[in-house]
Structures are given as C-alpha cells and as structure tokens.
Image 1 (cartoon, one colour):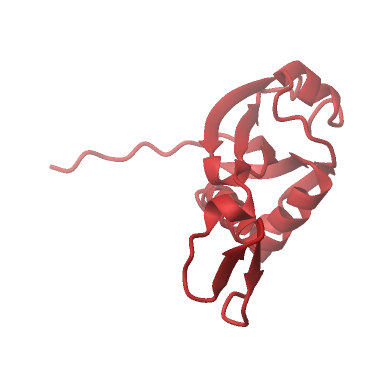
Image 2: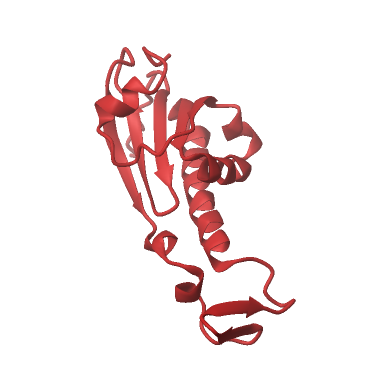
Length: 155
C-alpha cells in the first residue's frame, strides 16, 4: 500500500533574495512579514575574480603587457560571463520556488548592475512574482537591516 502524500494548504511564502556577483542569501519572510529567516546561501567565488584570473592563454586570447586582447572568437569578458552564470543559477532557484508553489512574491535586493543582470535572467512567470526591488548592496547586512530597506510589513 502506497503512503498518501500529505497536501499542505499553506499560503506560498514571501521570499527576499539578497545578492551580489559572488554570493547570495535567500531569506523567507516569517508570518506577518515583520522578520526574515535565512533559508539558503549561495557562493560563487568566481565572481570575485578578475578577467585575467578567469582566462588562460587559450586560442583567441593574447596575454601580454598586463592585459588581455580578445579576438573575434571571444564574445564577452569572462567576468561578465561569470556574473551571468551566477544570475542564471539564482533565477533558476527562484523559478523552482515559483513552480512548486512555494513562493507567492519575491523581493530582489542587489547593487544596480547585478540586479539588472538578475532581472534579465528571470523567466516571465517568476518576473511577475517580483513585488519590489532594492538597488543597494546589502549582502553583509543583518536580516533586520535588510528588512528595514523593504516595505513594511512584507505583504
């Protein structure tokens, strides 16, 4: 006999993604929206590296005089590519939360450049869940400080 899966009638959660190009924190709003609880951490150490640290003397890249020159075979800067990779990873996680009905709304908190990259990676359905954005780097701030930068209470 198969065990019956318990279905939950709970309301999907409100989430807050606080991110930068090398790390992110996914926070969940507690009932009432007056506090945040850390749910997940994401690390992307490649986001801290510089272009010359991300490339080798591969075809299409000439290393000399302390900088790299790209040939037509290299379309984008390595740091831009790594930033997009991390944004895609975060967007995928938000999409998963939306698809499993675990997220009703999400607030995005990031410095303006990364926020733009992240926004571009969100699928249409997840983008509709974005309830607000904060254009500041708050990754190292306390949950209380992050909450203070958001509309209160989170609804």
